[in-house]
Length: 73
Image (tube, rainbow, N blue to C red; front, side):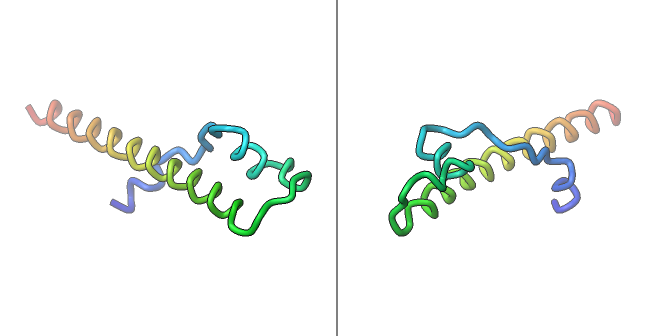
């Protein structure tokens, strides 16, 4: 499972909404954030990123599995 990790593309995913954009870019210094707001925004973004990476890894695994089955037939 760990060997597949290097194949996963580590590009960033698009941000959803203005809060994510403002909180995760250089624009964050122009706003007064309350305690915990940035952490919540970052947690949601990273959760979506991990979910997408996991789905990508699973699809690559399925593709490899199918190609191995075709070569052995």
